Structure formats: C-alpha cells, structure tokens
Length: 412
Image (cartoon, rainbow, N blue to C red; front, side, top):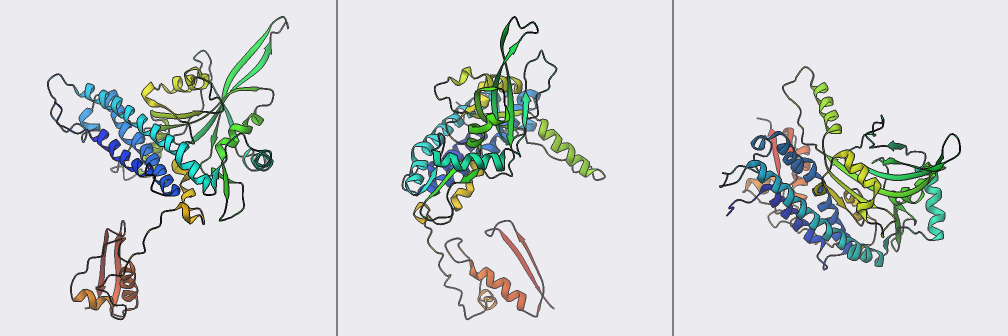
C-alpha cells in the first residue's frame, strides 16, 4: 500500500478545489468566470514546470535531481523510479482531462449563458448580418495587415522545415486544397498543405460590438474572427479544415548565476533553449466542424506528429482557449449584479483617527487582519513618517501587503 501523497497529483487536486469555486451556483457569473481563468492559468504553469520536469526525468533517468520533491520516498517492492514517473504522468493526464471537462461544461452551459442573461454576451459564429457588418471590416482593417501566414509541412520527404511554434501563443491552422494538373494537361488532381497563423499576444482578444454601456455588452473573440475570415489569406485555395491550437513547452530552466562575466549571454541562451524546448501539451479546438471526428483531422495528425506528442499530451476543447488572457472581462465597467459584493473593511478599534499611529503602537503591538480590517493605519503610518522631521529614511520590503517588512529610522 502506497502511504505517500504524490506532489504533482496533490497539486492537481488543489487546483481542482479552485475550480470548484467556479462550479458554485450561488456565486455571481463574473466571479465564477474569474475562478475559471485562475484555474486555467494555474494549469498552464503546471505543465511548463511540473509536467515538463517529469518528462525530462523519464528521458534522462535523473529522477532524484529533477523531481526530488516528488520522489523523496523509499521504493516499495517491485517499484522503479521510471515506473512511478510514468504512472504519475498517466494519472496526471487523466485528472487534468477530467478537470478540463468540468471547466468547459461549466463555462458553456452555466457561466456564459448567465453572463448573457445579465447583459454581457459572447457572440460566436454564425454572426448576424449586423454583427458581420461590423466585425468583418474590423478584421480586414485592424487585424488582417498584422498577421502573417506560415506554411507548415511535417512531410519527411520534403526539405521544408516547419516554422517554430512558440509556447503559449494562440495559432490558427488551415488545411488548404488547390487543384493541380500535369504538364501535359492529361491528368489532374488536388494538392493539400497546412498553413498556420500566430495571434500576437499584444492584440486584445476581446472585440466589443457595443459602445460602453451598463446595460448590454456584446463581445466577440479575435480567434473566431480569424477562423471566420482567415481564408482571405489564401486566394485560390479551398479551406478544408480550420483549427485553433496552443502548445506549451518546457520552461523549467534556470540561468547559471556563476557566469558573472557573460550573464547577459547566459540569459539569452536560456531564452533560446526555452523556445526550442520539448512541447509538453497541445490544446486545440477543431473549429466549425462539430460533426467531424477529431481523430480524422489532418491538421491535428500533422502537428502532433511533428511535435512527437502522445495521447496524454493532447487536450481538446469545446470553448475558447487561453482563458487566462480573458481575465480583463471580470473588470468590465458596471454590471454590478454579475459581480461578487465584498463587505467593506471595518476600522480597527485600536486606532483613533485623532491620535497619531506612533502613539498607538508605542502602547503595544497591534495586529491588522486584512482584508477584513482597513489598511488605512498602514497608509497613515507612512504619511506620518514622511512628515516627521525626526525620520531620516523609510525602508520597506514588500512582497504582498500581508508580508510587509518595514523599518523607519529616527535621528539619534
């Protein structure tokens, strides 16, 4: 019987508890959406660090060095480090797949409908004529000139090198087909190839259809616009498949801090290695073809084959990808009924606004319970120190306001 809790599986269970907050129907929809974006972002980091370390351990055999927290235990009879690592990866994939199924089911069936009912509606294709009349010119004018399609080929018989796929970037992929004929014009057929288009992260994925309003806000996804009108990049071709996908690479690298003389060069090498490191996950949405079996997608087969991904590394999604980048929606102006109402912090009884903070803390230490009690005494502490002629310097170390180290020096 295994008496140990695995570090990776325990972390997944922790993030599942974060996701459980999104599943709470008693919370308003924007609060539920916030928890969904947090859980999604957490999983992104988990893959590029924790899963990456486990995969590297399998490849190198350095089970203690790369995953020392995970394997700080004694082997039981019949166990091997390699076997344990492989099982952890398999179990982690199953747990995460289950979490993502719950996440997107909640998002598609509960959160998005509740937001729409409250006036914040995600509009997805097919668009109405009115929506098309706004979004298509917007795509042509603002987005089309910025994007660059790249030919992707995973055919080992060609000399073409597939373009680099950057970790964390959203890509649109298109399976293109064109008619060809022989030199003698006696026979003809079709030719297919794949093109991918990266969506620069500097672009806002949220495209608003309405002016600022506290009553109704319709919004569309930039990736949907690319899928809807991306065939404009490929005149003369017929688009047979469309796909939105994203990959994550191993980012568990550190800089050799002993290289004092060429530290900048060491940093540059580390960044290059990140760009070329092993892909640990691909997540995708096969766009516009709900009747198609994902396993028959030529784009998926080509990209996963080139990246050498196993079934445990591939995740399909029914909804928008990269949910963490949609977190700004939570801060939408107005729509207070869709947000969580937090009680205002109360004043600490030890502090009298008419008595300097210094006099209060001279009488004894005071513990502030944040965020339940007001942060105002800390602000007053700085303000009074800044105006005190006996204070010669203020030095503070801030990580979070709950972890504040502060020293104020008086003249002797």
